[in-house]
Amino acid sequence: MTQLFPGEVFANTADFDTGIRQMLPRYDEMLDAITRCLPITTNRILELGCGTGELSLKVLSRCPSAEVVAVDYSPRMLQFAQQKIQAAGYTDRWTGIEIDFGDWANNSAAVEIGTGFDACVSSLAIHHLQDEMKLKLFQRISESLTPQGWFWNADPILPESPALAEVYQSVREDWTAQQGTTLAKIRSCLGTSSTQGHSSHDQLATLSGHLQMLTKAGFHVVAVPWKYYGLAVFGGSITDIL
Figure (cartoon, rainbow, N blue to C red):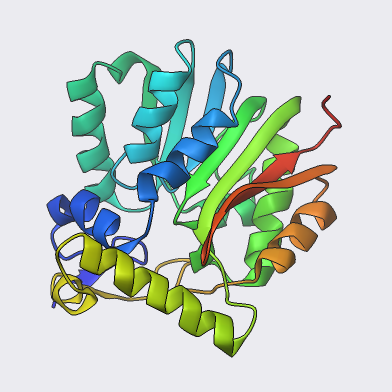
């Protein structure tokens, strides 16, 4: 099997957009929840772990004046995303940077991304960090935002009990069946991931654990605008915005 970075998932990058929609219930609805939580006037956006560019495309479509700085440690993901961004006509509003955002969390001076972002977004990436690194990343994000900036993250969460773990798994299996396939068939297209930088296999945290980390990292407004069983969109702002 092809060796992958954590988060690349599929041996063939071209399988990702279809496969992830078959694996994860309401994938597009989850990403749309992030974009809806961004004011349409948002200008400067940092995306952590852009993958194939699906969230970038939704953000650029919703926020007409936005410019996205998208980072990912996978050169093949960045290349795939760049092609889609170009095809959509957003090349002048999107910049892809090949870095490990874990390195940025550890030492922003050594990994230059910038500050003064109106928003930071991420999907299906941060859960590959251990909790200690998640907290460091949330702190770095809070420091990189403008006073009224927002951070929104979409990720799988750790089931709160064994019973709920069974429920969440059953929901995923039912969803995949509704797409006309099975998890077994999808898994046949997966590659084998290995540790890369600060990221490893799934390092899930509970939703309450994430919210506690966000509060500790300096976010005064913490919210969960979307949740569907074992998937959630959560984040907030460093200032109270009414």
